[in-house]
Every structure is written in C-alpha cells, then in structure tokens.
Image 1: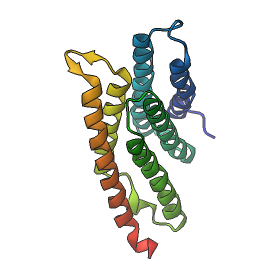
Image 2: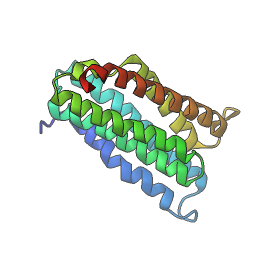
Image 3: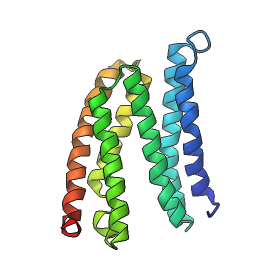
Length: 186
C-alpha cells in the first residue's frame, strides 16, 4: 500500500464512519437531537469533501495508485450505506429506497470487478450519469441527516424528494452500466 495524501484522506473517510454512526447511539441526555443531526451532517459533509479532494489531489500530485483506486469507491459505498441504514433506523428514509441504492452499488461493484478480470473495465468506467446520481444522493443524505428546517426549507421533504430522484437515477445508471457490459456478458 502506497502512503500518500489521497490514500490518507480515503482512510480518514473510512475511520469517520463509526464516529458518524456512534453519534446516533448516544443518549439524548448526552447530546441533543439537534446536535446529533448537526454533528452527523458535518461528518458526512467532511467525508463527501474528502472524497472529492482525494481524487483531485491524486490526479494533481500524480499520486494515483491501484490501491487508492480500489479503496476510494469502497470508502464511498461504506459511508453511503452507513448513512442510509441510520436514516432508515430513524424513519427518515424508506427501506426500499435504501435497498435499491445499496443493491445497485454492490451489483455495479461486482460487475466492475468481473469486467476488469475479462479486460473490459474501460467499457463501464464512471459515467456522467453516475456522477449526477452521486450528486443527488449526497445532497439528499445531507438534508435527511440534518432533518431540520434550514433557511425556511424543510430538509426532510426536500431530502426525500432528492433521495427518490437519486433512486431513479440509480436504477437508470445501473441499466446503463449493464447495457455497456452486455457484449461481455453474452
């Protein structure tokens, strides 16, 4: 494993997951519901920013590595899955939507691994559709984690709408990747 700034940021994102989850298991006497929401949203935002930053720095500093390319999407999927599971537990997200998003991530990860083994990984490289899906998904998760009104906006309502939109984009992007892989699947 190559130790560099991008990989350290990715590891930091992974280590933030138990911190992020643990805050919701603290009693309301230890930390208020408002502070739980604020802390979790801040940690998730930090993780999302490090996701962007580690990729940017890897390219900018020419510190890309095979290990980093493997670990970065794993960290992303773990953080999103943790957030979705917490939101389902809190009653802020629908379990079916969480299943669709997490199931798609597992399916596409397996597809990418298989495509790499048959030498066709470039045919299912990250698309703009996947990036748009991720943007809607991250915004939705941030709003649902915060859960309170912000500048007169009901974060729960807007977050739910964005999460449903992210789920639709999730299914669409999964179909797109499966179609791109179809020649290899036959």
